[in-house]
Image (cartoon, rainbow, N blue to C red; front, side, top):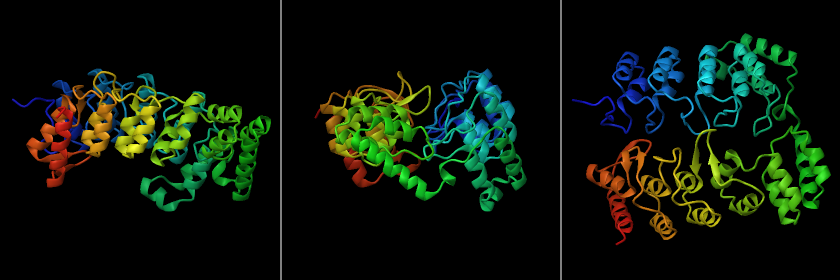
Length: 404
């Protein structure tokens, strides 16, 4: 009588995710063939992710045959293309690409697919990516290029031993990258030159010298600091600030995360004024509400207020427009401060909206609290027994949601 889509009694993950995570591949195949939901996102990863991470190409294809969606897969900044490169499986990478994977996908550290291939000494994958049009000198947010990562990883013996890739593989890859025009970037450029570039850039931003800014930023050798934008608009040079925002795509996922994580909220109003998006894009197909992201990562009431005043919706869903969690769901699941929940409701957050969550599908924030109180268990990232003060906190939040 047990459903193939039943959740594990120990985590919020369904049986298929648990089986794949624990490498019980025969059980996983049986569950898939019996109709298990292969797209369900558990507390951490979904089954598609584990199929790629464990290098199980046949199971990945089986999942796709049973409705698995590469396009809808979401995992923060990372994704299935990234993981296929980590296991150095070119055929699986090509398949994921054919099923909707994107070459623009990046890792959590903002490395492009070519950066990752270089780090993993994946020569055949590097060749395929370059044939697909990837820039051999593409830079990450630190200014490093694929050749930088290949060189530094080659010299990192402990890391090479950990990932079990011989030094010779890196030497072959480095020769190939150089043969197609690869150059070193920020990681291998002198500190003195980098400091001079920053100084010159700041001076140009402060004076509003747009032609000098363009000249300096055309190099693109060094990682850009968003504070340079602040210098420009503080000095009243709107065109200079606007140029830098568009040049470095400061409406992107990375800069919005940085602003929230490091509480640089003073940058937000001008970024929005000059075209920054209020969408926090985690992948090409899904996004996180900025208020939800702040609650999940930097639950500070002043940040929440700044975002809401800037126009971020308190009812917008994350990941999925129909079933994704709202900021109130995140506030409850993260046990955010009472004043944060109170403020969200004052700003029109709807406590009756339902979402698919780690506590179950189609639940309102109040129903999540009811589940936690009933079972005496708070599970977010891991299963934790509910403490007395947490129970009292949730009871206060419950009354607030009920309008009492």
